[in-house]
Image (cartoon, rainbow, N blue to C red):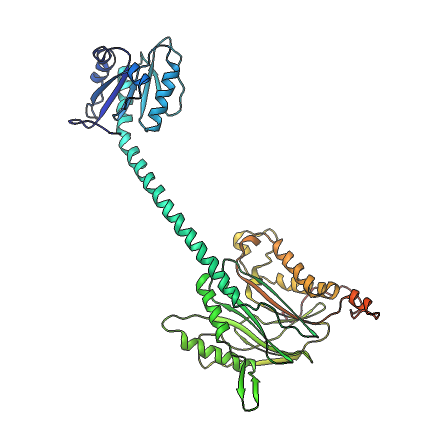
Length: 439
């Protein structure tokens, strides 16, 4: 489709019934005399109405003036469809005895309208057409680029899916089992990959090591950092008598120094908790690196297992102190990442309020302890997941969520009944006070 003609900046195409000379004399000449002074007088192209209606003759020009033949409504609408497809602006003149046409995208005027008004309308339509053509060209280019961008997005999607798969391969496929210890993990990334990581290892016959870390940041860089953390954590060492368990504080110190050695020009930081539990005595030893304190929960009482140490990847001389305690038979240990601080927003908060840290998660962990006493740890963790799903905006978490729960093994009442002895479950206690202590 062309615009304009040789020797003129604008071309008006007149489609009217009858010979070209008569159409030009009747319809165009009065308009040319009234053509607005601000616009260059256009060239004229005359097409016979019947020829255009019967044969799909190419229609060119900057603006089309249509004078339809009587009783030609079907042909008129077919013509207007063609003009709309070609994005040609048109002005329709209807005879006094013809009904006015209300057609989207087409300006209609009575044939006896003031020639000055008709000429000015044609000039305005023709003048805007250059802009419309430019917009059409840009839209075409945008559609072409949109297809390319969509392909790139799908490629990134596939790569992120692969990255998530690789990261999950670094997670334990099965948690170590112990007769007297129950271990469960809640792991929910906020995107394809997670900036959180956890690991649980059987160190020897009676000791289990557990590790939870949170790399600073989100997305692929943080996920890559978590894989480095898991790979670099050394938990045992050889000595003259065989294998010896590395204390948690020294294990974190070695991990910190190894990270700093590998940093190169870019710095990456992380928080972490590493601990060892003796499965015979439930004796726990912990060390932390700038991580939220693990929580010891017994009934309604919540106590922090405080550890001292800076974030990993900052100071090679950092020391990581240890804390030790024995897990009581009715006590849970929860090691979690700071994503829980925004996982349970207060009611009726806005999007900004959802991202403000709060302490509501402590109540949910207390609920976890109650559900553990009543139903066992697997169902208690499922209930905690259900609480997370019920939160506003849970489909778009503000942060990754990871919680490692360690508890003394509690016997299911049905199992105890089948063995013909009293259930190992403790008697039902009164509902504990929900006010956590030491927090």
